[in-house]
Image (cartoon, rainbow, N blue to C red; front, side):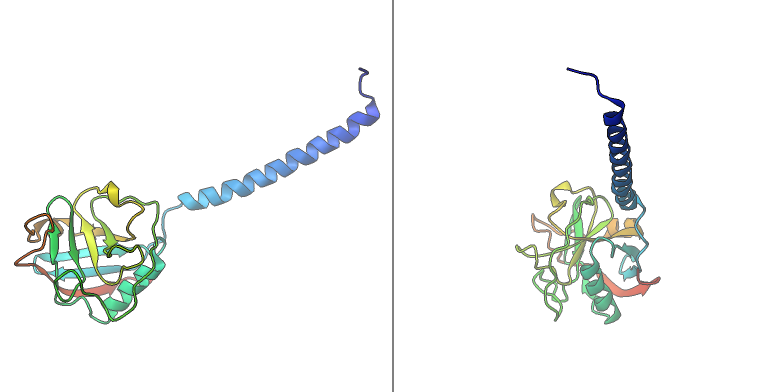
Length: 198
């Protein structure tokens, strides 16, 4: 085997520099989206639920579920949630509202919204959309978690988080039995949008 000549080293050196430059450029391109993903979420609008136990403020997350947030904003603007009960409240798990019939089977006049699952976790104060068996059956009902509920992660759409009033949520009348249906439910007396749409 002979040593490489100067003529063969120069093209290799240029090729190596070109490869390093391309690798560096592509490496930066890969880093920028990763950094963008870790940036804090843009603040979305909030809704204030006045309930029979006090006020609860929920910051909506259009960055996670734009179609679901759009639906909630529309229903809030139509005063759909005013007078609606927290029909299902399970101690240590969640409080559910958004069904004007109070049975857990009602919804709005609009079609169901397709699932918008994310990698966010269901923890205390997180607000998710309730649904039937189909992942694409969320409509108007939502729930607020009392505690971390990791079995919901990636199975239900997260639409927001409570920023004020978790103490109020904690005081809501609880249901009995496994289903958590409440016989004397607290109600959302009014729901109003505050802040700019995100």
